Image (tube, rainbow, N blue to C red; front, side, top):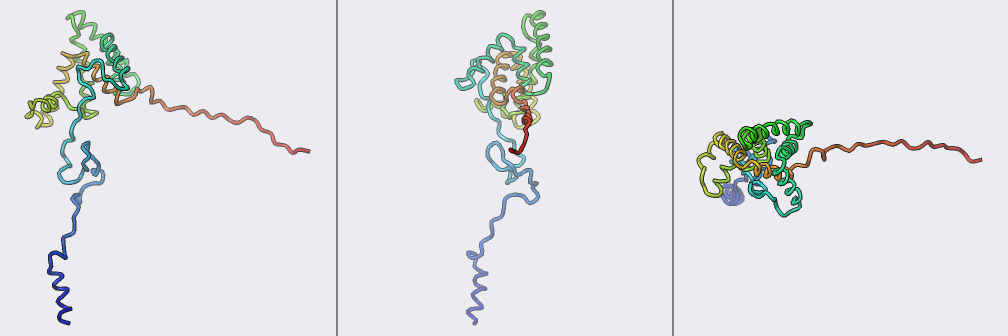
Length: 227
């Protein structure tokens, strides 16, 4: 009897038999809506993942790839290149229309751009005014699709501008200034790059119209009993 009474005491004292239960790394006070997934495939709400910035993706094509890529968007890329070379106002209006998807977006941006384009070329000999009007669209595209900016691209390629990326506010101010510089010095190439990016990510607003369901009543039917 004494040996039987000692056995449970020995089992309780053994550290190998009583291993600590695995505890969930999710904080108990974490709301359910935070338990999603980041762009890197890591669950939100686990450990130190919450609050960390998601990695930004590069653009689908470089700014110098004016002829586009050899894929199923090749014909669309050639159209974007042609519009950027001949009618940049139309390309800019089309880009904003895809990005905004609101009625009247094309005319509200294409017409002011055309006026600034004419004034800049008439008074200064080159298109120096329209880029100041069009560069916010590049910032909007970069923020909406979580694309890397010029500072992040330079830091990834050559390791410079690392100190700027540490502060989020300072990084965004620098990226907005780089968006303006890109539109001023490489305006047509910037419009073409934005057009290629939007056509790969967003359909044209005209293709989003809901189909109209037409109900056709059946023809008049008569029921009778054969005699």
